[in-house]
Image (cartoon, rainbow, N blue to C red; front, side):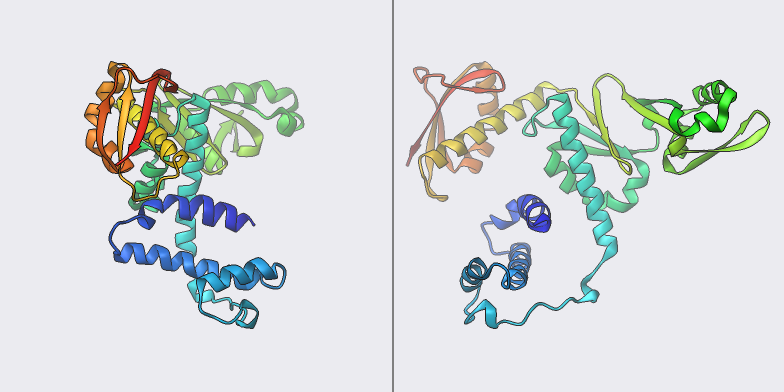
Length: 323
């Protein structure tokens, strides 16, 4: 169930939707269809003993076979396992998940483009050639890898009194004072494993469980992290980014109107709209893109159209007509 919901549906199929809808039957489109086919076929064979009817229906729609219950049960092939690829994709998914969470915390919709996502430089060797996935998933213009995270955030560190109270006893105040002198780079070392320091004339290994580390990003940024990954988003929105976000909201609303009208996926339309000068700017600036995404032949301003929907706090009227 987790594989179907999280890995296949919410990640693989959703993140490859543009490959599925390619107009030409390219090798890339064939690959995504064959991967999905192989996955579904294997899954229905696995679930056939416990979900016989739905697996049979899916199997008969996928193949010209007699019955899924006459097919051989799938065999595990260890040669197809690639742990390096899995590690890389796990990190990509972590970054995207944390980025979405940071957006929610900052109350920035996913359809609103943002300028930059910042990651620690050591991630570049693992996922540097896959940043296009991050850009698409998080609607971000640039991914920056840096070894100077201090430029964007500060650490606050204090003793984990539950863990070290008995260890230091009356010296706990000295330990607290020591922590207050640590640089961000030294705190990074603790997060990554341990830091060896001089404490009252003796060597002391400070490990992650001995301290509580909180992160505060600077103004204009937001962040999110887990035990392995830390992401920072630039939340400053330029006029160009705001216009693009508005354009994406217009496309979303038009696609919703197409669905409500029960239009075929290839049906051409005309779009009529009524809105403020910001709406005019978004339509004029992204005219051809909106037309291509919605299969619109024309976009026409209609001043008497009722403004009955809200897009990014702006009242807008939108109507479509099948051509």
